Length: 86
Image 1: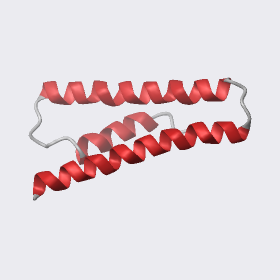
Image 2 (image 1 turned 90 degrees about the vertical axis):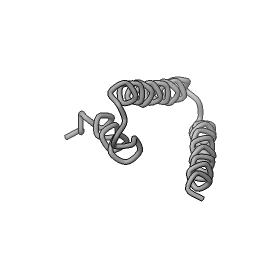
Image 3 (image 1 turned 135 degrees about the vertical axis):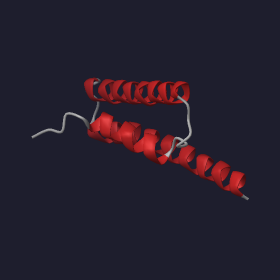
Image 4 (image 1 turned 180 degrees about the vertical axis):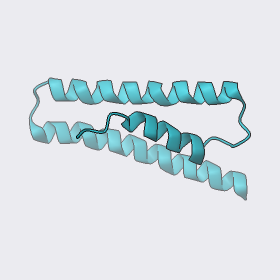
């Protein structure tokens, strides 16, 4: 059976683990909008790559590029977080 609520569970995890517990309703709403907006865009990217009819090796290059971009952002975020806690 396919889990129908993967994004909702991801949002709930993000809400608990990333957003400050004292965040106001506007910040929570805007964060949720950004979360789902990012998920929607990533889904479109992955769909477009899959629908393009490209070879598997070329598809892997697209996925690797997306992963590299996400990894770079994670590293940047970790540096900013550590710098803020120093």
